[in-house]
Image 1 (tube, helix red, strand yellow):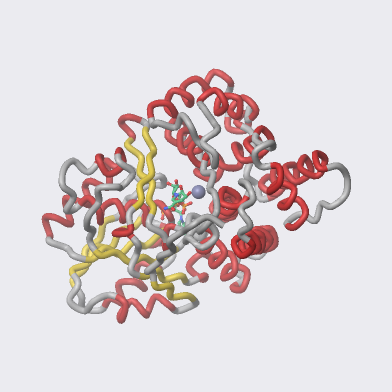
Image 2: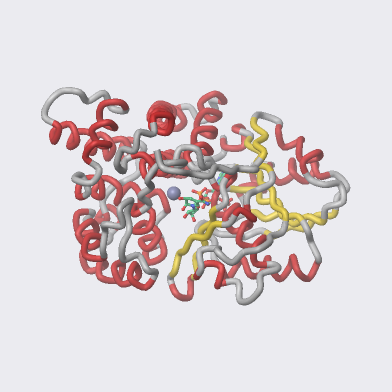
Length: 385
Ligand code: NZQ
Ligand code: ZN
């Protein structure tokens, strides 16, 4: 096992009716900004429930944070927090709203131009406004991690940052708040959480028995509850298990002490920035082809994945790996997430620009062994057509 430090200060408050707990989670004298997205939290009553729980506290609202939150929009929230001297951010929404709120939290008192946060992956963040969140979409794990992803539309850049200063103080997870999700977002969430686990699990073995079994159990739960969440949208237990699995897929434990890949995400972010695909759609396209082309580096873990997750135990090693990759693709497709660039109208003529953007963002040696150069990413993209 590799050396690691594990730290996660986010208090998780889980279950139906948990929004009422905001009354004790948020300081009584807080001057609050509620940040939310395009209106789903208003339409399904979550926002009203949040405001009721906050009682007589000073509350302002900032809506309109878009999927793949933009720097341009978030800077307006930064101005509002500064102008109104607000001191507590409450994100109500999915990964985009929570990521966006993390950026606002770090940007308010940042020394220098806030885009620098993304240019330096958050390394120079020294403080942040206090932040809590109410999650409405199980997917990213953002509710209990210290990462965020922000898009600057004007230069088509989608970049990530991380800092221990932006861990949410708490995450309220009420599975009932996910009942209003459209099937596309449920499916996206399952794929995103699944790929988070895969990026931390299908690398190379380091004798990390706990992390491996933990990853395998999360993958198996997602394979089980993903289709159920689509088939029976108001089943509380199904939504509860999906929500808890998605949080754990990226709150630190699965990835502690093991090599991590993240090349699928890095290529995927460029596809979203250039072509507007949903985050999970990009992952469903890239991952199967990346596993195929990196099967030498990932050989042993692919065999373990085949056996323990898909119960593929007969045939040659190469045949079992082929079958496991095919099952992965079929799982994404079964949820309704298409797995080819051509399914989204993107052809070979688009690949040069994706590679150029990878180069511009320093993604020239990616993967768990830094073994993927730009030409390798280009080969993967061609396989994705
Ligand atoms: O904007 P509203 O109206 O709220 O609608 C949203 C949005 O259109 C809707 N939605 C959310 N909760 C709903 C709902 N609709 C009905 N009922 C509800 N309860 O869903 C749509 C998508 O929301 P979004 O927040 O964009 O989705 P997701 O949670 O998948 O977040 C994606 C973003 O997270 C980043 C992605 O790159 C992307 O920008 N990621 C963040 C990570 C992290 N912080 O650790 C890791 C991930 O790998 C990922 O990169
Ligand atoms: Zn993701």
